[in-house]
Length: 138
Image (cartoon, rainbow, N blue to C red; front, side, top):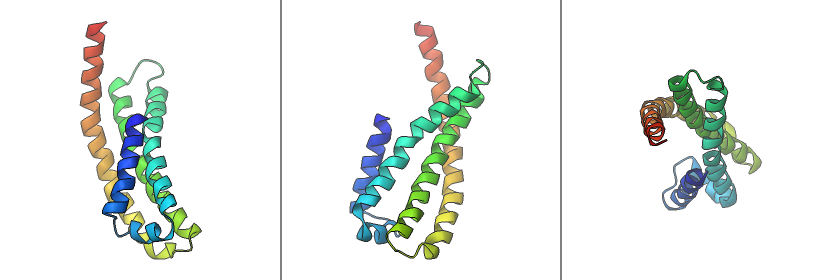
């Protein structure tokens, strides 16, 4: 959760210093909503990953699979909530959400899937190696 919070705060700082094209209109309408969008979506990453991992590995099997699926779930929950909240906040503030819907969907589909694959490829071996070291220490 601490890393998620740091990631969220970093995203807020980046939104104010080097905003993306999609964030600029929302930043002008409500900087607070940009903060909520940036922090909440990042705080949900470890929550989603934890519960997905716990659910899949509840019987002590599927360790590699549960780590990979949990990594993908954390990544996807971040993408879905960030872009989903962006769309909701566009609507709430009266910005033209229809105009950005296609862009948000395209970014979500392409970037979201690539980030999920990267999360699986990076997190799975790292978590399995850390778990192996931790078992040796006991």
